[in-house]
Image (cartoon, rainbow, N blue to C red; front, side, top):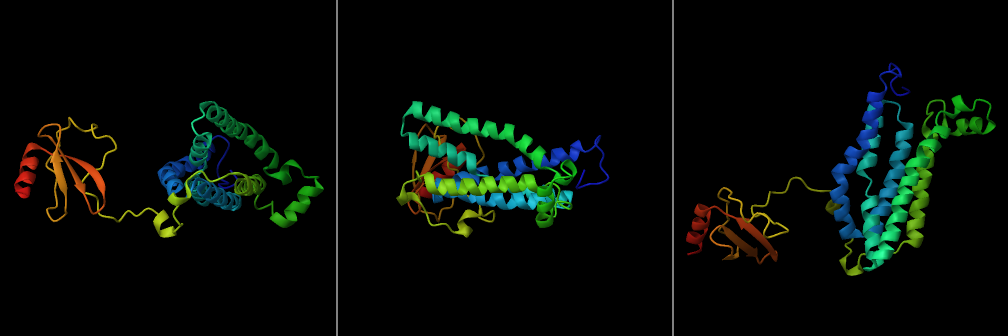
Length: 268
């Protein structure tokens, strides 16, 4: 209602729902890439970057004067959130196969998450619109002179969240050890982190489980005769697997009978 003065209590829920859900939309879009970054640059690296970005976007959200900017800030906050997945991975790797320790530590982490969901609404409620809630407070008047709480009545809750993120950043830096082996950590480059959507789609499908598509009957696949491949057959005439020595990667290609015959003719 502060962002859209024309809204009333009866119809403000729609906009509030959009703001709340925009965070999860952003989080959904980048969860895979945060996991990939954790495997490349380290678990603590992704946690610390997420905390710093969250601190920035929390402050921007507290300063937004319009609904579109508020949606953009919350969406960006979701995009920058790669914390939980990295934390769970660290717990598993730190436990070193000790299931009891892993279960206990995971329960503590998830419990803290739950406590955050309980404490945050109450804390935000106490800090929101302080000039209206505490009109006689000298502290609020002092803060208003620095933060302009008249124009930004919801800045204090986001400022508190920003301070929590910064505190967590220093705690992670000081007390959390990196669990990804040093020889697997790659130097961070922004160009490698941002996913490229302009790459040519791969012709040969790579699957994690070789038996996953074994019984499917797909259309003829294209095979580049100029690419060096070492091929063989398994599972009858319906399955063809090829290895490209240039990338040292095994992939499995499901071919129709016509496609398999075509490939064999090319080999001969």
